[in-house]
Length: 191
Image 1 (cartoon, rainbow, N blue to C red):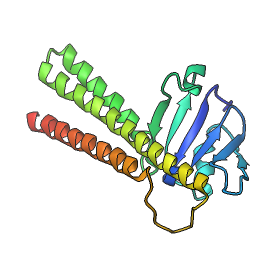
Image 2 (spheres, rainbow, N blue to C red; image 1 turned 120 degrees about the vertical axis):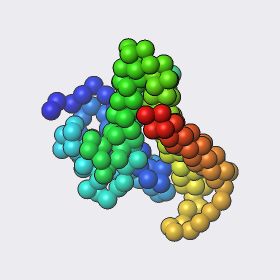
Image 3 (cartoon, helix red, strand yellow; image 1 turned 60 degrees about the horizontal axis):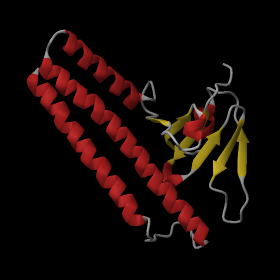
Image 4 (cartoon, rainbow, N blue to C red; image 1 turned 120 degrees about the horizontal axis):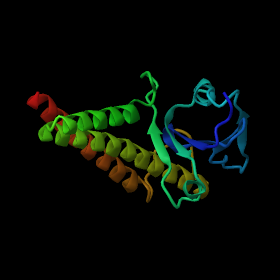
């Protein structure tokens, strides 16, 4: 498969990132405390995720930057969480689309109740997926702050200004996940 005209940034567990442009080079971020950087060569466009997993790195999701506006943060990237145990791995994105199709089918059949519930479920899946990205961003900010302060110690617990922001991001995710649970329960109750 040819390289696609898209920049991809993988979000890793713990706040790290892997940035891939439109070639085989992938840069790991952040740099080491010594300032050294790390890059790797990926086999193909489609092997990116597998190549990173083979390094023992766990992936939370991926930002796709299709436009210059997205790359410059003037527009949000396309975000997809990755579920490595699922097939396809973009399960949340696919489920968000599927529920919007259910909402559309209910609308066409003039079933307002199911259209409403399915629309809310579709939206809430997308909200949960975006909240996961916000949590990943909070961890990345905390990691970068800790590395910048040069006080990072392996396996050492710490509390800094970013810790409460990580908790807030997690709280927001859990609130949206509980709302999704309630919408799903309402859907199954009404069947």
